[in-house]
Amino acid sequence: MGEHTVRSFDEELKHVDQVIRDMGDLAGAMVAGAIRALLSSDQALAQNVVADDTIMDAKQRELDNSAITLIAKRQPMAQDLRAVVGAIRMAGDLERIGDLAKNIAKRVGAVGQSPTPRNLSHSIDAMAQLVLGQVRGVVDLYVARQAEGLKELRNDDQKIDIQYTAVFRELLTYMMEDPRNITACTHLLFCAKNLERIGDHVTNVAENAYFVVTGTQLPLNRPKVDETTTAVSA
Amino acid sequence: MNIMTEKSLEDAVNAEMNRPNEPIKMRGDQVTVHYGDKQALFGVNLDVRQNQVTALIGPSGCGKSTFLRCLNRMNDTIDSARVGGKITLDNEDIYDPKIDVVELRARVGMVFQKPNPFPKSIYENVAYGPRIHGLAKNKAELDEIVEKSLQKAALWNEAKDRLNEPGTGLSGGQQQRLCIARAIAVAPEVILMDEPCSALDPIATAKVEELIDELRENYTIVIVTHSMQQAARVSQRTAMFHLGYLVEEGPTDKMFTNPDDKRTQDYITGRFG
Image (cartoon, rainbow over all chains, first blue to last red; front, top):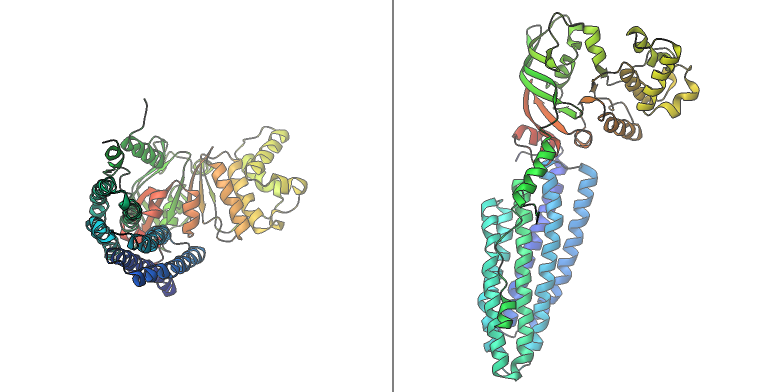
């Protein structure tokens, strides 16, 4: 894409884009940190993730301010308009991803103090790696402006949903085996739910990024799997 | 159950955006214009649909005003101008020798960039057209036309107590609405506007834009504008010109969010070299 006649317009757009990248990187780092803290019962790391959320919130405010000022000053059109509106929406989802990572980090202590936490938490590992891959992937694809990749990534969310159902069943089994596991497993269940929600926010980011890049919306329906309700009755 | 599928919903939205059912009021078919040796328009095909606002955009010298001026044969007044191709109004060739140009310009009225009221009273500015076209049988009828035209142009309330004062004494925005009233007074079918707001302040511009929206009920409007935001606000369809060619034409909503042509994209986003 060529440059604007007014060069400061380009700089302002670049700034908005940069803040989204920063937020995406931070979201990836927070999710990775929260998962590592959970799997290795690392309290210090968990504290870092909680602290990072303040940075995330500040970044979102910075983006809101820049985007709104840009709209007021430049009245962007076409791909510029999409980039700015898309950035505002993506920032909302990235900020929520940060919140959910923080929530996982906060549970590290509670899980860690229970008698048999570490074996149980490994059931989440596979799911966590999927989610982390999605979070990092969506930002990379947005930065690289790869529409097709974003479409695939959005559909990949169903893998997380399937994994979530598996984790849910597994934790349920642990709880039935030994009621002393219930506290830890309940916290882990919330962690799994948070990871699943992070996956949903990633699909939102992917949808917005796709719109920014192509100017068209992805179809409303995407494959969705949530079998936890049937797992309960089974 | 009658649930709209996503596909049919999408189709409905597209249909609403494109309004393919509105009849074509004017059609340009391979329109070319030469000013002397210099060609200003190259084979432009453009449909103007009834009761819609069609915006013509593009950088200076792109041919948008030239095309607009073809639609009521204003280019006839320029000796060196030669118009080729075919332009129809309700399927009638307007360049047909049998066409009465004066009558054509009554059917296809024009509002210019700078408000240009006649140096006469407000009343006379509006009454002049109907009078020479014989649209009023007596003074009472003429009074009625003047009042209705001023009302339609949203100027009546401001002007009704000063109808005998000179039109040039009005503010710029009021003068432009007076010119619109003057165009409306001869009961045109199409109104051409050549940057009607470029000399007006934002409030006067908003009034004219509001007026354009209302006029669309009864008239077909073609507007040339340099303001992207104005084109996006007032028009249903937008045509982008560049170097004498029609680059792209489509529903305004699409043109300003996701245009197909790179030149359109560069122009509306302010990237033109």
